[in-house]
Image (tube, rainbow, N blue to C red; front, top):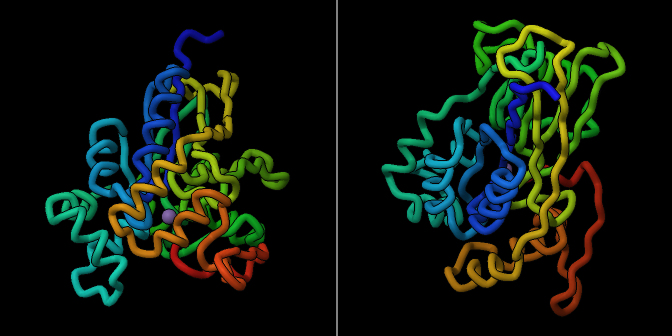
Length: 273
Ligand SMILES: [Mn+2]
């Protein structure tokens, strides 16, 4: 066992779910996590945006700007739902969101690691798990969003799609793309999800230990759903199905009465996550 191993939690897409965030932070403490990187979308959708922002400011070493963070900046938005979340967050937190970094780079066991919200092209450029190899390779390029100060990364991590994966490429074999999933609004399975990286910080040596791990945590969904209805969160009924069943709201179809039907199709995930 190398003595300088750091454990870095990569979390994303908390979306106002403080209960799920606290579950993840407790797990980080239990695992001896040494740094937490948050890839954005702190508020929106869930009930506790202000509390989540305040908690992340204190608990996360880095917070990165996501597409919902960009929505929170829009004073003139026509969306009642976005306005509801903006009002709750208030101007001081909105200014803090505005100034968050768009991308971050660091070294771990000889690898260049890069983290951003959605892609190297921008917070509204979404890359799905079934995207082409060419699209996935573009995630490793230096762009205006990532800046040009660092060499191109070996490992890229992102959030945005609420669907976790870790994919070491076949060609080129020294690249790995991963998605941290979503802490507070997971749409792959209804558990708070994050990725844990471990390795030696600032090391240039590829032979140092390196690991990537996907972590899924059950949490108290009932209390979050109850709070969403009590506060009058917009589209609380759709949020409930997302939290309980990991079915994205754009894919929920109402049948007779209150039962819902889901068909999974990549063509359908076009709306805001
Ligand atoms: Mn999101």
